[in-house]
Length: 257
Ligand SMILES: [Zn+2]
Ligand SMILES: [Zn+2]
Image 1 (cartoon, rainbow, N blue to C red):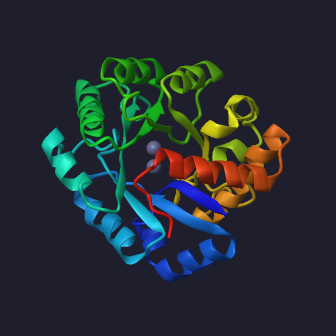
Image 2: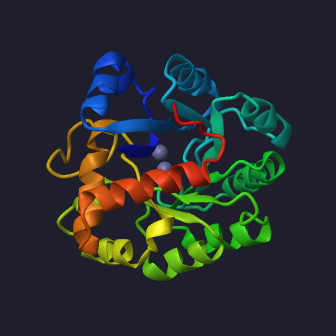
């Protein structure tokens, strides 16, 4: 039993063959997946997946890369998060890789998401790229430790992982952990306590080895879990069981079906 803690199944590549995608999941023992929102304009597609399938869940949030989109305020996020299949707020965070000018609106948007998560007590899904110091600073300033959450698609250093863990956060690894040149990241995967680990695909992006460069899908989270297991000298069932238990502990509104 495996759970894909972060994917974008509403994106055209995947939704085009929804039934096949779900059949592949079932065949590989991937029992549940969390469909993550990136903007309000496409939220209906994300929620629709969670409504059609008992084993899919949804989040509500606006990705830090999305500049020209509807800007949510706290009240709007709370209203949308009240849907029974919405189990998290995000993805949110900071991304100075795609926005090298480190715009203030990203930080404001991130603060809004943290405040909403605190008010509805749903965990945060945090994206951070080339912005770890500011991400951690805002998490501390806004009290992100209260709802807690996950640092998704983690690619930062052990020191950053340590600070996120100190705030009670979970660390989620994607297919990047399986890439040849990712030795430093595998060191981080070794370091994270077993009860704070999650695995994800971030599908349709970042397919793990041996599918690197192809369209990713939740079924492939098994290869991510295998890469994490190899890095830790553990076996797949141990990682599968721990990451599944961790998922349902963190995302407490997710009812397994
Ligand atoms: Zn992300
Ligand atoms: Zn994502």
